[in-house]
Image (cartoon, rainbow, N blue to C red; front, top):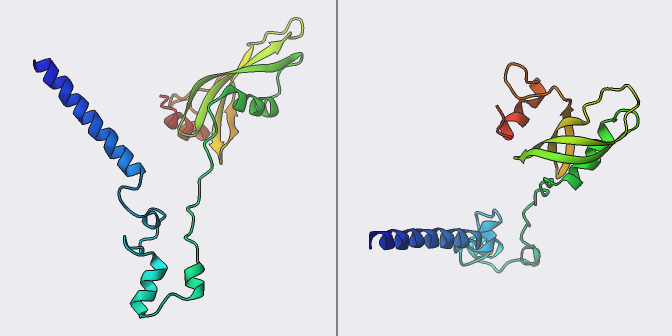
Length: 175
């Protein structure tokens, strides 16, 4: 019986949290003008009407024709997808002679940063010792991936981390 009560309570809490999130996303009972950052808008009247009513006159043609300002949309985040990152690798990093960048293995990707392994294809020249991959750190800038740094010897340990990778390492949760 105790298990049933615990399960029932957990379900009620989960349902309440889901309803609260849905209510908040729907505006939380506030009019859309208030959601768009117009603090002067009251729940009953749009801002241009309330200003005119305060003055004791009907709104002017200009005030009545003003459209509410649309919120500025931030660019979409760059996708954590090999197809989005591989073209940046191919453009920025020159592979060894006889080699090409075949694919990307994403090690970490979050908070606007990515750490990937670029994997080569092709055949290196004879007597060439080649590791076959390159580590790269990228940053999301306005929805597009840009290269921060690359190299097989990079790491995020404080004693050997390059200064330009500090923010990336922290955002990726690396030591």
